Amino acid sequence: MTSEILSREQLDQVAAIALQAGEAILRVYGQTEVQVAHKADASPVTAADIASHESIVAALTRQFPQYPVMSEEAADIPWEVRRHWSTYWLIDPLDGTKEFLKRNGEFTVNIALIHQGRAIAGVVYAPVLDKCYLGSLASGAWLVHQGETIRLDGAGKTDAVRPEPIVVGSRSHASPGLAAYLEALGAHSLLSVGSSLKFCLLAEGAADIYPRLGPTSEWDTAAAQAVLEAAGGRVTRYGTDEPLKYNQKAEILNPYFIATAPGWAK
Image (cartoon, rainbow, N blue to C red; front, side, top):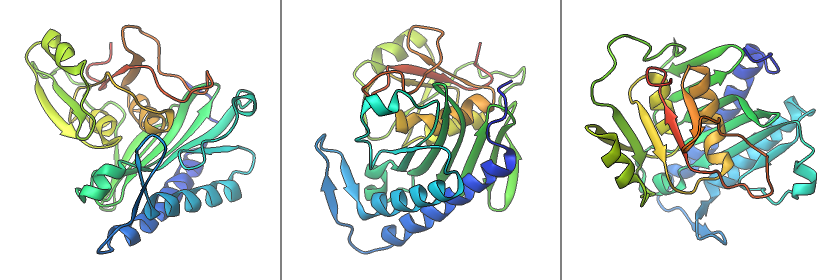
C-alpha cells in the first residue's frame, strides 16, 4: 500500500478541477467551427486544449502550491529543473484532440500526481460521456457517472475470466507492431477506443488488455495508469515486469507498454 500523499478529499478536489476544465472544453466543443493549429510534431491543438490547460494549472497552483505542474501545453521545462522534482502534477488538458475534432466524445481531461517516479493518483474525466474516473494507490479507484459513484477496486477479479480477452487499441493511432502481438496472443476480440479511456475500460473490467506498441508521451498515460493500478490492474514496460515510470529521463516519450485489467494482472 502506498502512503497517502493525496487524501480522498483532496482527490475529490482534483476531480472538481477536471470537471471545471471539462466545462471549458465543452464550450469550444459546442461551437460550429473549431480553429485548429499544429505543433512542431504535427499534432493538433485547439482553443479547447488551451482553455483546459489554463483552468487546470490555475486551480492546481492555487489549491496545491507545494507541487510544480507539467502540462502538455507547457512542456518546455528543462530536464535540469524537472530531474529534482520528487512530487509534481502531470496533466494532459485534452487527451484525444483528434477524437475531439471528430466529435465522437472519446476525449478526456487527465490529471496525475507523480511521486518518486510513480503515478500515485489520477483523475480521468470524459465530459461528453459524463464519466469521471478517480484513482489513488493509497485508497482505491472509483467511477462517478450520472451522479452514482461505483467502486472499481476488484473490478474483473472473478473466477469467470473471459476465455477470449477483449483487447483495446487506439482509434486514431495504428501501431505496426500490434498485428504481430495479437497474432501471438491468439483468439481475442478487438475494441477501438480513443484517448486514455482504454485504460479506464480495463479498470472497469469491460476489457482485458491494452498493448501500446507505439509512441505515447508521459502525460498521455499517467492519470489513467494511476486509476487502473488503483483498481488492481497493471501497466508494465513491454517485455518486462517493470511498471511504467515517470520523469526518469530528459525525453517525455514512454517506452512501449502493456496494460492489463485486474482479472488479467498476474
